[in-house]
Image 1 (cartoon, rainbow, N blue to C red):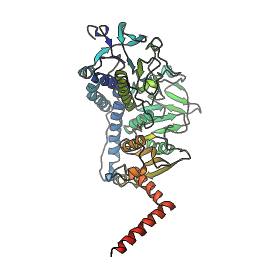
Image 2 (cartoon, rainbow, N blue to C red):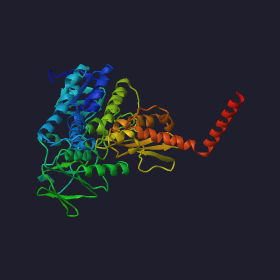
Image 3 (cartoon, one colour):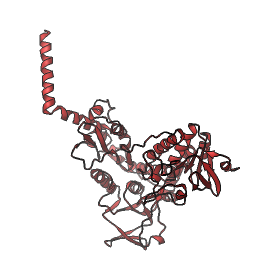
Image 4 (spheres, helix red, strand yellow):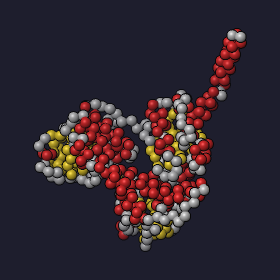
Length: 478
């Protein structure tokens, strides 16, 4: 930052953090004519660009290429001598980051009319802050500082150079043996990617199944896929200590590793922000407390993204940023809607879900489902593990869904729309779908639900009456 422009004016919106929420919030506010200052102490683009979405999907793509080459013989395509260069793989991951980086850069913000400051921001009062000691005045502010990986309390961990989802991308090559603790979405994705690239992987989860927040049937499908890729999956297993290059489980089982990766959760980045001085409340975990409009206890300050404790996804942060900025600049009270937040685990098969859970449903709900193997596309691609499952209410509206299969995240899109807009299975069944696709099972599930209703006694009597009436009309016309 040159010439200290921050001290010369009162900013309409001060944005602290330049991850997805901060970037979109700042650009939205500037587009509405506000004077906006963004402060970032690290990499512009946040976790999604540097340590989350972008590098993990690049690594998964490399793993998929390797797995596809090994399994190509089932199509009569024989690939001999698949060789993986770990250094080249990690270089490709970094190229994906640098290719996307300009979109989130300070120059891109400036082009959108945003003033940029590089430094550490701290609130000093309800309407004041400082950036590395330099004072800043604002009319409104947006806290968008995101979250950071949590390190569990494990005896002996201090003596190990453990990796997290932030530091794993610093690897220059692929480890020979990797132990992953935590089988949520990140743990499963990275475990599968590294295993497909030739690393010997052990995945340890204290819950009784992987992906404990998803439909149990989806967890089971992915468990089989991980084991088929060579991952040693240990569920219901707790780490007692780390010593001599081994995880020691509480039952005494040792798991040897060259590198240890911890994926056990994240904590909000609120420490040192001066939120108490600003009059902003946080909860017991450190998340900024917000209402449905994303306003905090200081009505001049809003928060967006992972720092709020709302679902920690980039798409949520983006919607948050836009909504918070619009409310701040225009004085609106638009509310965030969390009823149809999509989520995807980008393993193979992918697991995608939205709305109400499909594992167990209320008495006034029912499930309709079709297996992936019923889709002709799954036959042509020889990729049949998965299913589509819809939660339907008494008025036939789709209230939730889980899709398991290739490109499930893409297939989920129309189901997210259905949940958010109150569409029925009849609406889905009546919409023409392309053939053949991996989305066929959800369409066929909707069709099956419509046919089930038509087979009921009331519907059958009505249909029978219509058929008889039509028959009589045609006879009379002869």
